[in-house]
Amino acid sequence: MINLTLLAPELTLIGTGLAVLLIGLFLGTNAKKILGYLASLGVLVSLVLVLMSLGREDMLFNDTLSFDALSQFFKLVFLSVALLVSIASIKYTEGNSHTEEFYSLMIFATAGMMFVASANDLIVLFVAFELASLATYALAGFEKKNPISLEASIKYFMIGSLSAALMLFGISFIYGATGTTSIPGVAENIDLLLGSPMGLLSAVLMIAGLGFKIALVPFHMWAPDTYQGSPSVVSSLLAAGSKKMGFVAAFKVFMIALIALQAEWTTAFAVLAVITMTLGNVVALSQTSVKRMLAYSSVAQAGYIAMAFVVMSKTALAGAILYALSHGFMKAGAFIATAAVVYMVLSEKKDSETPDDIDNFRGLGRRMPVTALCMTIFLFALAGIPLTAGYMSKFVLFASTIEAGLVWLAVIAILNSAISLFYYAKVVKYMYFLPSDGEKITEPIPYTFAMLIAVIFVLVIGFWSEPFLYWAMEAAKVLI
Amino acid sequence: MSGIIDVSNIIYSYIPVAIILVVAFLMPPVTMFLVKQLSPRSKSPVKYETYEAGSVPTGSARIQFNVEYYLYAIAFVLFDIEVLFLYPWATIFREPSITIIATIEMLIFIFVVLFGYLYLIKKEALKWQK
Image 1: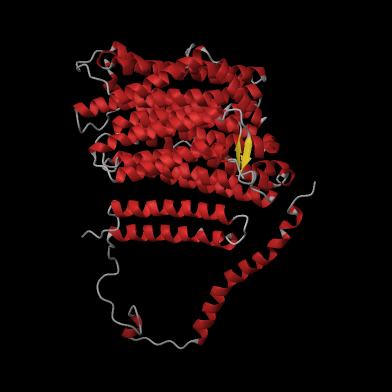
Image 2: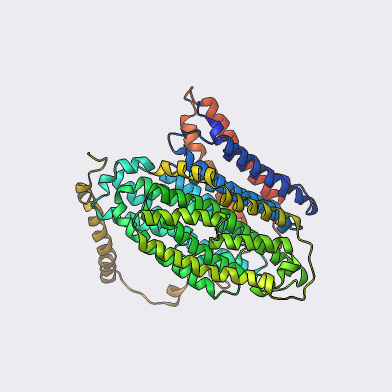
């Protein structure tokens, strides 16, 4: 009899998703508020179940799902983001007659991400990837009457389908040459790919397919439009959750399955990482929409994390994995803070077309003090100011790069980090130093609550990072 | 280490495919040429109708389907595909060691599909509105 207790978090989550969908059908629009609480509770229970299963290792379903430190760490990242998003969305979905769809799609997307983290087989990986993608395509276009949201959704869908096709094509070449789709199985039979042009081709296709999801430059074109156009809470799920799913899939595919082709893909990742962080940061400088700025900063952060594929040491991987966790909290928090501002603007001026414009952040320190403070902490953490999660993860990642002798890469990354401080600080300047004639606003509790949770974790990881770093190290050991 | 598939021979196993490809490219021009040479040609107004031996078409060919038709179509395709999953289950169902667990799994699956049906009805997706 297989050990289903390990699968309990996923089962709980899927059960919650179905329950939310069904209960929502029988509720009136006003009563649908409880769905948000129900979904948050389900995600929380699932989070606790993952925490309880920490340290256990097993394989399920003919070794197609593996449960280890790596998968559990990333599941915690996805579930924390999902928890923040579902709490914040209680306010966002208020009075919306499609609340049940929103929450069930969000939960199914999270379940898909969790299965990607556990996948030990390329087919399972692909199916789980698609589960998460399809749900988020629909979420990005959740504001059906808003053309910008629809445009975001269509762009995301088109590029997402293309990348899925590329990835599947890559998988088919890997399968064709090695005769197996099992990830460790591919690593065992890698001789068959080595030296044949198929190996290079499949590595390129996999980089392109996963690169779209991670939003590495040149595959990033969809990201700014989608993050800007989608509802802010959905952008936060996309940037903080879905992007990490791309990373965990890339870790599994490249570091475990295609490790012997390292010579081929390390150079590619080095080039991509440098272009990604530089372009992301430089373009972010001139953005006036805060969501778009956060999107480009998210592209840049993907560049930092991709450095781990170049350095390939245990510390670097631990740094990247820790970065994934911190980025989850920082980015989700920043997008939720933006969501609060968007809510404020829309409640004052109903048909504002650019509710996330930086001008709306004027005097936010006085108008919405808690939101402004949280946003400041998230932005400084994203820039990598000491005593925040962003600093710790950047420190580990950059230090390991220098340790591995790749000083040039570390220098580029640090210079980029310095550039990024400019546009983050610009938002802080608008919030605290520029006057505004707006009234003080009562801050919506769900947004504030979600932001405070994120702030606590951003600071805890920054102040007391040993346990998190230890977890990340354990997770990195699975890969190397 | 010997692999599962012999890569050195893989190219030769594709020779039949290559032959088919060549034949496929040659076939249409050759047959069209032969037909043109052999068949008698006649020209009359009836010849240029849409259905030469059928009824006279009416109206424009470009009509818009009601968008609800696609909802039906998608729902149909969904449930149609779901049934496919029953086939592998049905083939192994009789093995004693697996009967109970397979039945439970299939019931869960069918219930999830049933939820979907309930959802469709509740959301009035199957109601034809004009």
